[in-house]
Each structure stands twice: as C-alpha cells, then as structure tokens.
Length: 134
Image 1 (cartoon, one colour):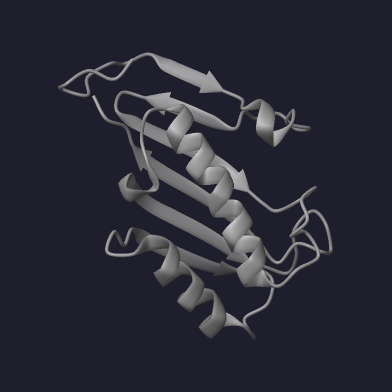
Image 2 (cartoon, rainbow, N blue to C red; image 1 turned 90 degrees about the vertical axis):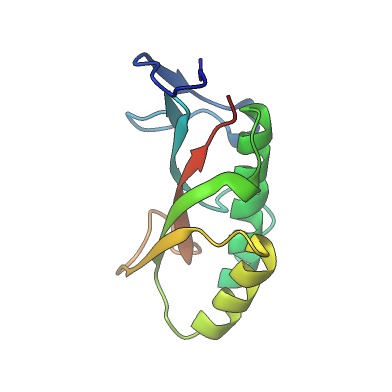
C-alpha cells in the first residue's frame, strides 16, 4: 500500500486479467511504495498487432491507462517510459502520437532500437514507471 511518505517496503506483484496471463517468468507490474513498475507491454493479441508503430503505441497506452486506473493513478503520473522499437523509419509519426498521448505531462524517456521483438508483427514494446497517489 502506498503511504504519504512512500516508505512502504513491501512489494506487490500484479497481473491484470485484461492483459492475459503472462507466458514467461514475470508479472505485469510490481508496486513498491508509491511507484509502479510496469513490464514491457505490446499490442500482441490486439487489433493493432499488425498495424503501424503509432497504432501499436496507442494500444499500448490504452493498456497503460487501464493499469494506471486499476492502481488508482493515471497516465498523467508516468515518470518514465522505455520504448523498444524495431524500425526507425516512422519516428516522426511515433513522436507525434506520443506528444498527443502525453499532452503537457511529458515523462522521462529512453528509446532503444532492437533487431526484433517476440513476434514479427510487433514494432514497439514499452515499459513504464508510474507514480501512485497516496
């Protein structure tokens, strides 16, 4: 549980039914104090899976929105994201999409170009760190 000082030292490991059961040795998120660490999210299994990188990013942020709401927070409280992308050709479109999603609440961010993700359709995977409200 998040307390006003953010000093809770217990870890809470969470899975969210709307994301499906993890197929590997991980959970969807881990809560520590007033911070939520979200595992890499993709558009796998959704209508955006074979879409453009920006459509996949929108779907990923829909999932992040659902996660943040489930944890009593919002996308306004994203501290940092790390995006893993397979193709740099549509970076301008991706940046525009992210500006639209973030609005005035820009997070810290890292972008890493990777050779591939676990499915050839996937163009982006995003990890997030989200502040929780006490």
